[in-house]
Image (cartoon, rainbow, N blue to C red; front, top):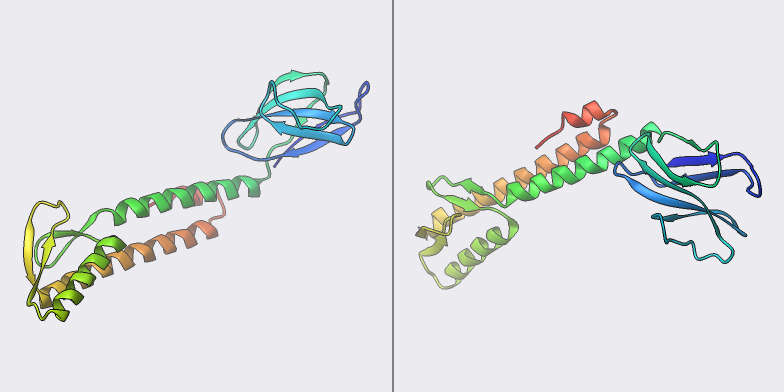
Amino acid sequence: MRTISFPAQGDYPECSLALPYSRNAAEFTIFHTPLGWRYATGTGNVFTGIAGEEKVLEIALWGAAGSRVGWAAVTDVVISDAPDEIVLQDARKSKYDEISWSHKEHVAGSVMTSLGFPMQFDIRDILMVEGAIKLAQANQAEAIYLTDAEDVTHYDIPLADAQTVLLEMSTAFAQAHAKKQTLRDDISKAQTQSDLDKISW
């Protein structure tokens, strides 16, 4: 949160409003209303919806201390810095999102199998191979038909080898998930932006 405050002046009583924190620029309009001080997101033609409201201040806030007063009917506006913990929470969320995206990209890739060709190993591909093995077993077939990660080369794989490929795919998937969880734990333990900067996929 960032706090906007100014002393009583003219027809306006003292004001102190806490506004949401964002590392990106966010604009707000402050209103004096019969119910007290209120804010609406955005500037210009925005309203709180409270009858008798009066626009008093248009302001943009960003990051820990960034701000810009666009228009004001009052003076001596004081804008607080965001608390360190709020800034750190926001940075943690951003790092969580970064790691989640990296995990998705990684799992959408491929693992080189011991048979010498790559296989995609997201959960969809694992289930497809697992299903193909079960179907082959039910039909007493000796092999299954697989396509490599590039969807270029096709292979007839003996069931024993197919089980090995499935294990390798599943292991790669589990390792990626474990890495994601370890990094998320590291993020939750980070105490500074510098700590977070050291965390990467």
